[in-house]
Length: 421
Image (cartoon, rainbow, N blue to C red; front, side, top):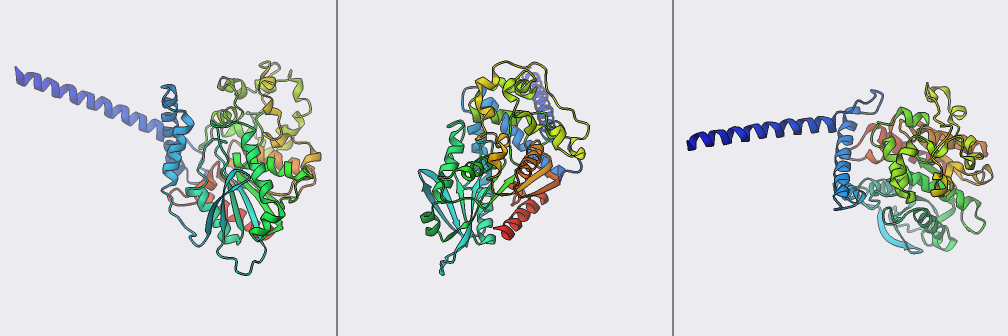
């Protein structure tokens, strides 16, 4: 009798193990499998990276739904853990943590400048949807070391506070404040920096902040120093159209999905997360929204983009939308949050630009439209487009998760700075 019970018990355990194995296999298949265009750089490797990111994001969502932790904090913890695995390089670069007007920054200097010769400088602003990222660790730290070493310049990375601790316009204000501090003649002199050779650089949300800061400093008569150059790496520049051709084409391409970008915007602006469905439908920019009259031509991708980028995609402009969104979230129309909306009278004071875009990136058209608007304003623009590029590839230019397109992209923009800075 006992033997029979034991046998049945083992049978139940085997069945449970089988069920668990099947569920685990299905979960792994769900997380891993993602149909990707063959023109993407190393699609199989990207599939693995995307699976890891989706898994962490899912854990964050579960943690928040249980009231344990804000999902962004959990995701950031995972990012910090991963970035700590990136090995240190360019150890000859001197690193110093400082405060610029109360803002945390890290300075990278290429060895001892015994002759005190004047050199260039780069102010770097990291991405991560205004809420994620570890600028003093891993890939960002290594990127800044690489720039300092190869350009023989001073690099300043701004460790601005992020959502959910702070919301717009705090991130912008802190980047502006730290930049203004650094551009003071006495500060530049302290670090042997030529005031005529300072650039601002940023990727993704950092590109957004870099563009907005460059606009503000360009038009501000009260700022002693100005930026000579701006480098914008797949920048996010507007939140009025989540159905541009690139948003439609790449909405499910990692690592930045269309819905995720809308989430980042709402988090940054401190808006109701329930608005995401209206944003994805472009209900906030329907034809009945009179506040958009002056802004529509600035992001009319149907007339701005070349035919090979528009493809067969159609604009999404509902006749009637969700009333009150623009009044409820006025920052959607604030040029400090959406630099693409700036007037030409402001853009003409922006520094010479290098703008990078990737074909498989929802933000591709943000960059393309900004190239067009800067050129309209008479600003010299170098546009570098990667047909195999995806969002975030620059952060994957170093071991253990390097991609060929990320290595090329970093080398290309550093070469451009080498030539023009």
